Image (cartoon, rainbow over all chains, first blue to last red):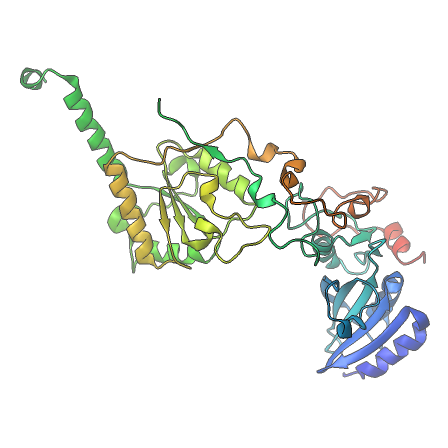
Length: 177
Length: 223
């Protein structure tokens, strides 16, 4: 049972008004752009409404638009974008939802209440980008060591780090006496 | 025994021979500890299996317990999160022990000149033989094992020792950024720290969180 995805997105935009910033299609990949304050509301509708039924969350990730060229920055009203990749098993459709998160405060509501699959993805986005997911049940680092400072996938993080890789205890040479 | 003493009374003769006998046994029955973290480990497995057959050199008994092994083969890239584990495992190996740094990543970081990769494990543990290549062919690993055997025959090994007075897992977090080039205010500060823990942290390390009705209601604005 196929659905008309662009018609659905248009309906979503009419239903949520200003919370939806726009929608687009590029090479048969549909994208819905929303405000970060409305992510739970919109995603809950997309999960539960019979016309959408995106009951599977494939991935949660994040994008930092800090050093994007100007012509691409138009798409980014805020610095960060939390990206939800949804799949509808009923309709065999896929949808990308981008929620734009400002740099200050870098916070967004967690969707672990909607999909359990969001748990680790949000932890990774927090670890790498420093986006804090409010009401996440266990928001801690998932990839980097627990005592790591900073969020290394931010565009202003130096590629070679800030000395983390050199600051371990090193061996000492035994001098034969 | 008496005959031997009559020929040469010095004990040094016997000790030297015993040393060589022990080294003969050691070099022909190396028990490797495989520390395979990347594609070099695939080549290491190929070396151990029948086509290249490291058993011809007596080093086929892979031991996954460091307490039973005497040859560490570091094959693959080592991240800053893995390095304390590597040091821990290396310290658990009994003396005497040897170490092969296999491939470009273990020896120098390779192409991964990034914030998270150790630029050469020889900064942290003593390495006896380096193998170039990305990844090295199995012949290279066999050659390295033979070089280790020659080293044992000469009664040599890398005597650099890790400073055991410090435990790698005990390090303070400030040590990670102590020689940062300059403070970067965008990356630090309180706003990126964890929020106040009004939400109960679940103790389970794995598995999905239990659905909490209140929690869901708070997410959705109360329904």
